[in-house]
Image (cartoon, rainbow, N blue to C red; front, side):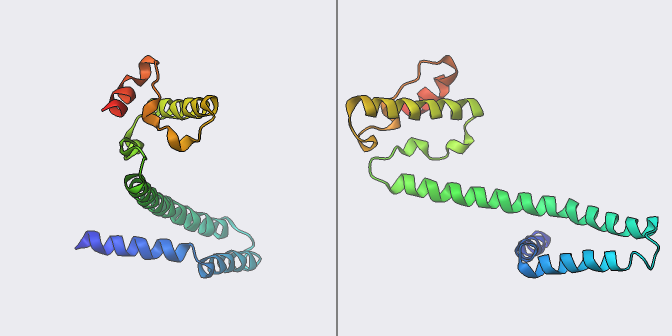
Length: 150
């Protein structure tokens, strides 16, 4: 129950924070703060008010932005996985490659480079070859080779 309340609050806050209205209000607050500066003789307290406010807002926004980013990445990956799964001739073994290590992903990039080179040598289109047609002799790619050969 509490989780759902925070989920809804985070979603709505993220949507609102990215709106034009939020930008206009933030700009208005800064202009208002600057306007009252002479009234408070640009004192330390005057500066502390905006520093404290922006620090708190920035702290919270970091988490909201990370949440939104994580959600976007997951949904994009799911959509890509669906496209791979539904495309005739595509390697279903590329589904969930985001779980691979950086080294394995770099090795996969090397495989795609080699696939392009192989295709160019054969004067064929990339559609006729798949990533499974390319092996990488590099020892650091043994897990990747094993995963793609299954």
